[in-house]
Image (cartoon, rainbow, N blue to C red; front, side, top):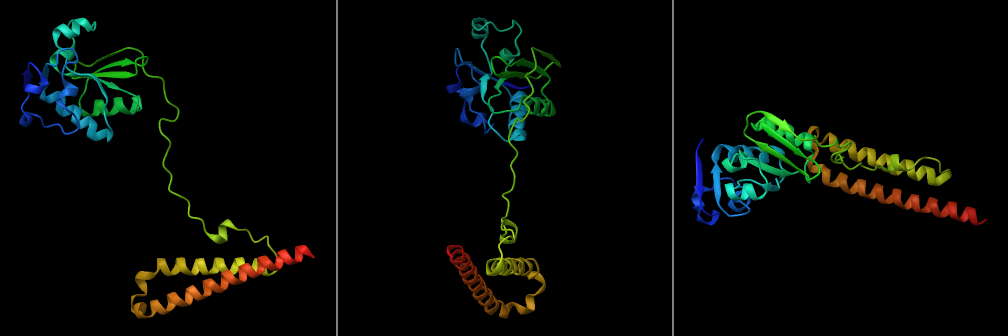
Length: 224
């Protein structure tokens, strides 16, 4: 299990760092600036970041022995070996986070819901603390925007000329959809598509004019 140790993270050669989503300052001891890099642990941390596809906010990584004592850490804390990380859950669903962490090879889990972070380390396999409360809806699902079609968005409750104009405009939309869906089967007609496009535009303009006339007609009738 290769490790790299430096008295301060600024002493680390740039060529020794190969984890693109993290910086040496994030992994270094918060009390002394010293850094101990366990390459296996860092590889798994980067794999977890890649798997989740979103930032990991590191509360604590390596701790020097003196800093570990100062913060009340366990006497044999994995933080002093550079194999443990405390990750904030502010931007993660804890259940999904834990499943992903186990999948990439982390074995030790500590739950700190009141402080808002989860401890993960390379093992041995164990867990402690109270699990995070379940979130009924961790993140709102992304739904594709609904396509509004005139024939669906307007009912045919309007009578007379207004209703006829609505049906005509809806028919134009249906014709355009059919042409779009069958475009690959009408390649021989490509030279005539430009003329057809102008015909459709003319029909659409006529439909709009009829619709406007129908609305005006209905309005005039209402004024009588």
